[in-house]
Length: 516
Image (cartoon, rainbow, N blue to C red; front, side, top):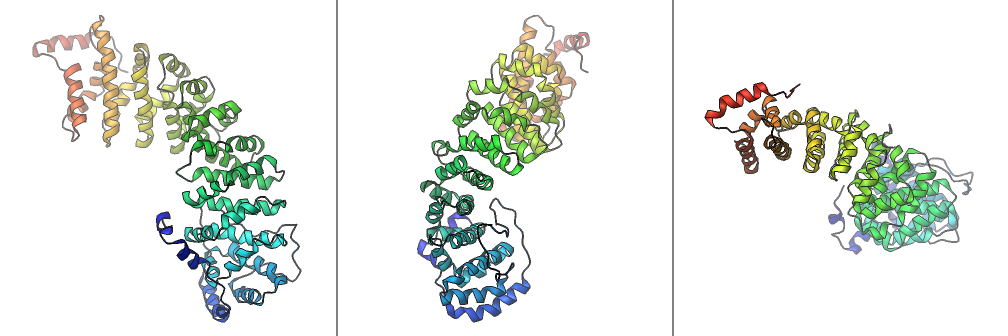
C-alpha cells in the first residue's frame, strides 16, 4: 500500500486528472478488446482489510427493470460507455448498477473502470436529488472505490466526494443514508488526512445522530463501524472532538449482540480510553464497565482482547479509577486469563494487572488476597519473552511499593527463582528490571538481618537457586548499567571477609529457611 505522504505529494490537480479524467467516447471500441483479454487473464483476489467492499445485494426500494441482468463483467463495459455517450438518462440506472456489480464481483478491475473516465459522469449522479435510486447506485460505486487503493480515495476526496456523501447522510431515505455512511467509513479508514476532512465536515456528529435517531438496524451497525474507523485511524485528534461518540457507542453496546458490532464498540472504547483518562471515566459513569467485564473471559478474541485492554487503560488512570477496578470483579477475571492458551490474551491480561500493581500497600493487599501473584510468577518461570516482560513489570512494580510482609509473601510464592530465571534471558531490558527487583528484595532481607535475624534469608535463596552465579557472570555484560548493578548487588549482599567464611557457612547450615 502506498504511503500517504507519497499519495499527497502530488498536486490536487494532478491527482484529479489521474483519476477523474474526462469521458472519451473514442475509447469505447478499443476498450472492448483489451478488457476482454484482461477478463480472461484475471483471477479473483480477496483482501482482508479494515475497509469494506460491498457484496452484491438488492434493495427492495429499488425496482429493477426486468431486462436488467443479474451479473455483469468487464465485457459489458463498452455497452455502458455507449449509454453514457448517448446521454440516455433513462438508461443511467442500468449503467450504474452494472458498474457497481462489476466492482463488487471483480474489485481488482476497478482500475479498468477508472481508466475509462466514466467516473466523472458517475460523480455528477450524486447530485441527482430528483433521482435517488441513481444517487444510491453512484454512492455504492464510490464506496467500492474507497475500499481500494489510497490513490483512488485521494482523488475522490479532491473531487469533493466527502462533501457529497455528508450531504447524502442527511437524506430522508434510509438506504441512501446508509450507503453514504458506508462510503464515509471507508474514507475514514484510508488515512489521517481523509479522516480529519470528514471530521471537519461534521461527519462524526452525523454518525452519532444516525445511531441515536435511526430505527434501521443495519444503518446503526454501519454508523458504529464508521465511528470505530474514525477512532482506529492514528494519530487521533483531541479527545474533546471524539468524546460525543462514547454515549452513542454505549447505546449500541447495550443493545446489540453480534460479534462484529460489539467488537467495533469495544475497540473504539479501548482506543479512546488509551487516549484520555476522561474516556475511561465516561465509561465508568455510563455504567459500561459491567458489560465490558463480561467479555474478559469471552471465547471470542475479537471481544476479549479489547475488553481486557479497556480494563488496563482504566487501571492506569487516576487513583479513583484504579480503585474502581481493584474493587470490581475485573482482577479475578483477568487472573483466569493468565493461563489462556492464547499468548496475546495472556500478555494483555498480565499487562492490565501490572497497572494495578503500582498503588498503595492497601491496594496491593487486595491483589494478594485474590491470589493474583501466583499466576504472574508462573509466567516468569515459563512463557514467551514478550509475556514474561509484562509479568516482570507487574512484579517489579509490586516490589517497589510492597510492605516487608508482602515482599515475604512474594518470596514464599517463589519470586526469587523466577527473577533469577529472567537474568538469563537474551534481552538487556528485562535483565536490568530483574536486577532492580532482586536488589529491592535483598534490601528488605537486609533490614530483617539488622533487626535480629542471623542471616539475609533472601540472599541465601538467590544463591541457592543459582542466582549468585548468574550475577557473577553479568559482571562481564556489555551494558555498563547491568554489570555495574550486578557488581553492586554482589558487593552489598554477598561479599564477606575471608575470616568470616566459616561463620557464614555455619549460618547457612543452621538457617531454618525452606528452599523447596
